[in-house]
Image (cartoon, helix red, strand yellow):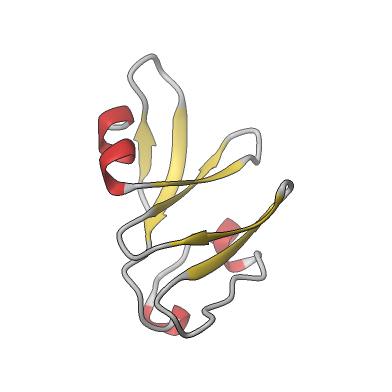
Length: 82
């Protein structure tokens, strides 16, 4: 996965969820270490320190250098990151 840099200098490592099976993805090491789940409805359950959140198809799962993980829509991701 590539690093993406926000306008203003914040950098994240991210991947886009496009549905399907996790085995079909080349996940970054940090994402492979998470207990990601695919409940069968096209979403991806992503555990974070604030609880487990659902990523929908097209969403980006981003990890900041602090370890914070965030789920963003495709539109939000591309409005923030290059």
